[in-house]
Length: 230
Image (cartoon, rainbow, N blue to C red; front, side):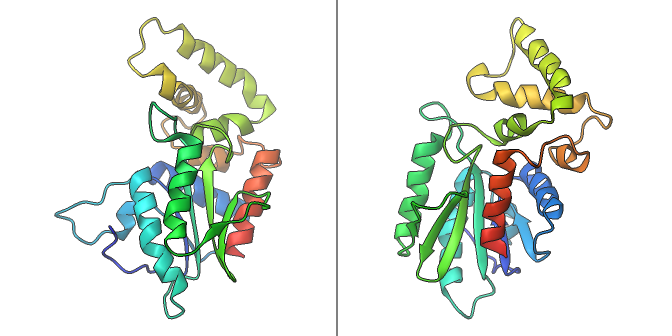
């Protein structure tokens, strides 16, 4: 249990940090989703500033365990709930897809929620008429992160610039970052740094229409969000 403040929204989408918040707020606007959706990283739920609640995947999962009882409580403010986390990489960093999914299954089982195996849009857990959503980036199948989702959905007319960024990153003789887990991060960060508005976050890829929102993966994300929040 980590949350010490009561949720102030009826529709909560948990994300890992501020960069994710900016991106998925733009996604919700693009899809014209319910304006009540609060895209929130863990720090939004802290009130004890002497003991900061760090953002990150682990605290998203901890908060999920705290918020499921709220979802079950008819008198609670919380009526819709979902979480988006990176799969990261198995055995090297952050669990990977399979172990992340198992972690959420274990949390869900404590409150008698189970995964709908037949669902084709994201991941949905239910208990009777109640449900909550889970999206494990990039695509609910593979190890990776938000940057991999973005890379998959980049528009065709942005591909040349992305290729140039990728070639530049690969040409670095002695990179300081870990190529095993941070290569795509470096590629997307470089591509974004070469846009009309450099130094902006992931949200600019949506705001400046740099991604194919009609891509199959993006369409799946839209259907999943609408299933949870509409």
